[in-house]
Image (cartoon, rainbow, N blue to C red; front, side, top):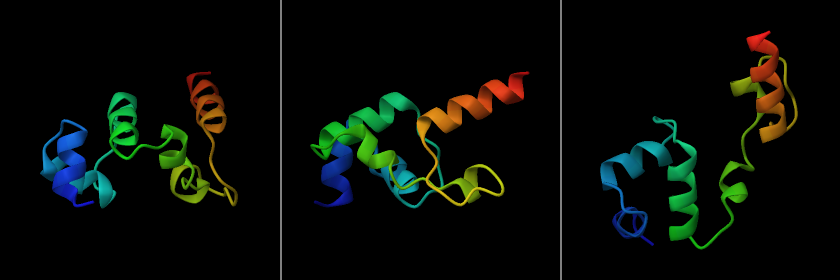
Length: 77
């Protein structure tokens, strides 16, 4: 599928989709769900490749949603 086709199915502008695809924009959860629906996949599949070193320093394994929530709670004190 082209970027234009995916963006159309996800009801978003192709420029925004391109920025997300290139990692230049952070997406809100509803955008991830719309993209997953357009791609006929589980939203978790779109998040499965996140790795800790970019998100949390000194992290060598995959970074899960549970890890994100724990880190957010820890920062909040």
